[in-house]
Length: 499
Ligand SMILES: [Zn+2]
Image (cartoon, rainbow, N blue to C red):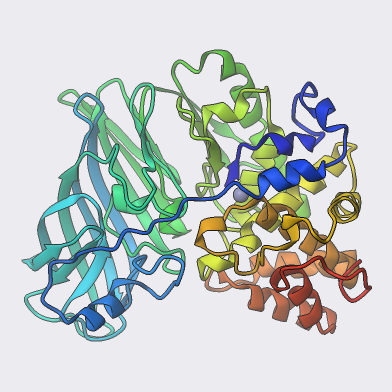
């Protein structure tokens, strides 16, 4: 994710120079302070589930165990596949349909939960009607027979609702756009449009079938495997064969200009620009159409692109951010208000390696995503004649005094409210440059590529990156990781800290 912050115009590449000059080519300490106040308002609603289980047993079942989002995800099973089949009608704003969740029970399950904010009307497990009850966020399913440990079950949930305007905590991520609506957000979004085990540590494959009125488009992740128009509606089917985290799944419903083609290396791309982008249309198109060349450059830096499709979607709505939706990032129209923004495309595409292919095991590891995406922007800047990453590190280190709030946040565990604090981004990238200084360039890139390519379960944590870096380099890195990620203070200028 990249939020729109004016201080980021210090980046000399891919941005208009008009506002850049105000920053005078150096990151102003004051701007950094302003940045650190940007927070993600977290979800804090306590559910009131309507089940008769004792409170303790219930809360133990409600989440997968991520302290930042206690209700996110569910223990007891892993999802193999989501088959989403929903319609969306812009005129009524109603989303309705059935999602089939193919799950494998890790333990005997007399009941289990899915995360869903829309109202369910029917649930079946392996084709047999199941009892269910629903709280604010938790759908509790009680199959007629418990699902046995190790068994695979097909859980079909039929539901409907008006997701626009539904709030959960401070979040209302399902947004109206000029001609339709879009389901996009991080971390929460899935519960607004399909029942899921909503946590990045449980990835799955997806088939997404979206029905819209004739004349409308419905865009999602992966490959477009079907499109047919019957009886006044068009049915779009999308297929994701690689493992996808629930928050990286998106759906855009509306009237879009869709462009398809192949990159020079043969990867199919699909761009979608919602109608009416007006004065940002040219900048949005110019930016998103640079996807193939940026992708080729990123492959040279981080290794082969991990997916079979690519592209970008620009809904006609001021989202205030862009998000790295797998295979097809979504860019809010306002991201292009100052002109083409190619380093944003670099950021979101870099996440395909760092964030998507290797997702966070817990949300506190978010710096792994944002640090690498920001570091990719720095490398891109250098590639285009700007400062080196080492200069980016130095300018921040030298200009931000130890008393600056920038150093206070422990970005290795920033807290839910500050997941997307600018320190997570900039200090995350500084941490990587410090690691590169410590290990040497060759070892640093070997570690980073192995992190992606050799990562069997597609998940990562700070500790796992440290262990990999230690294994590859033979260095002991506890001190460096602690100084940059967990000290809450400015790292001492030592060789051990990569300074
Ligand atoms: Zn990001």
